[in-house]
Length: 152
Image 1 (tube, rainbow, N blue to C red):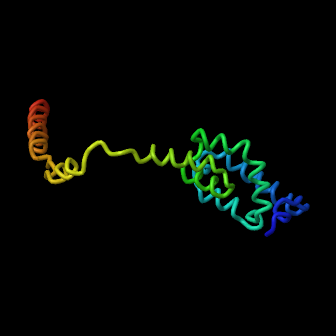
Image 2: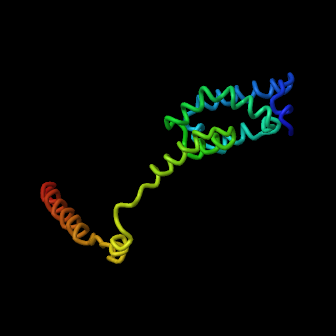
């Protein structure tokens, strides 16, 4: 596509597609559980004909005032932020996604050798027989007490 095709005005059917995508995104934003799923975002935004560059740019232009601040303040999961950054060419969100990755995968506190030594120890086995014997003795004592009370 040349530059004139990308920056042209959208025709009526393309404007309708943009409106429908905007409605789907607004509905998606009302469901916090689904907004964390990058697959749902991809299903809405990558669906033809919304994936055509002129439509994509218009959708991005309309969504940017609302979505970019939400993505920057952590309202979306990292995969969603990464997808939005790549799909709409929002370069500032690439930095946000990188920061999220650093927070999600901090450096481990224990070294590999310490962890390996913990793995080498055998697991503790809990012995349940004293508890079983205690219950049996308790039941025998109760049976003797209540058996004696009934006159038997």
